[in-house]
Image 1 (tube, rainbow over the protein chains, first blue to last red):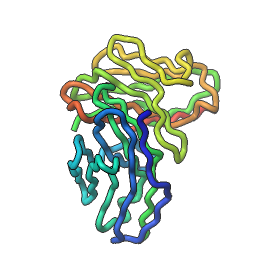
Image 2: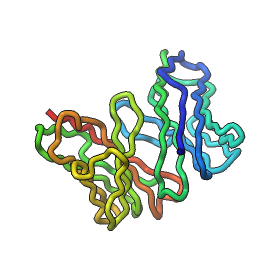
Image 3: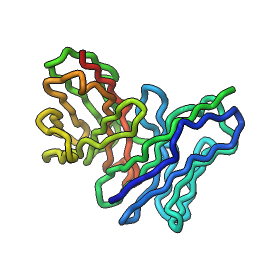
Image 4: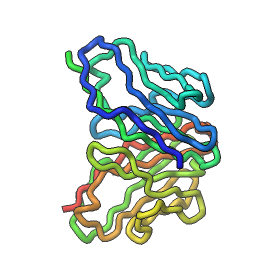
Length: 113
Length: 117
């Protein structure tokens, strides 16, 4: 079945460090891929997305490239800030399932000043 | 982007009572809404999918008689936790897709923290 696997957290970085959170997926169709961010006690916010192979999603300094050959969608940021501390979820959506999302397990990021 | 509003954000109820959570799409017609449950420090678990005007489709292991879902209009879906017990305490999140919101994105409510005492 369709699934998403993320690197385990928590990830602890110092401010201005480089961030990579790995995400790989398994899908029988042609999924769209997403990164969502969740701050404590809140719902999910879309961070970025990519709808087809080789697309690069970017937002607020975060980037991820849809790699079909490696079935990956790794999240990167060149210089993290304390305010980036949150839980990050990688997810996929299959077009013919009405918007149903399959989530990875989430990766908690903690950025220290 | 499109806005989904979920209410209430927090609720505390006594064991044995029922609680209703509302999920509204404010600026688009939500043809499909999804209800998720999230335990502390865990991922989101899909509970059910609801399409306007039809019965919800529940995921395996989710009790449909306990978690009643109604999607009576294109802008509102409700989740009612019936005869709540402490083990139902959790964070519940809805999402919606539909016309006017784009076909390739789901929009999330802010979540409801349910505590059953």
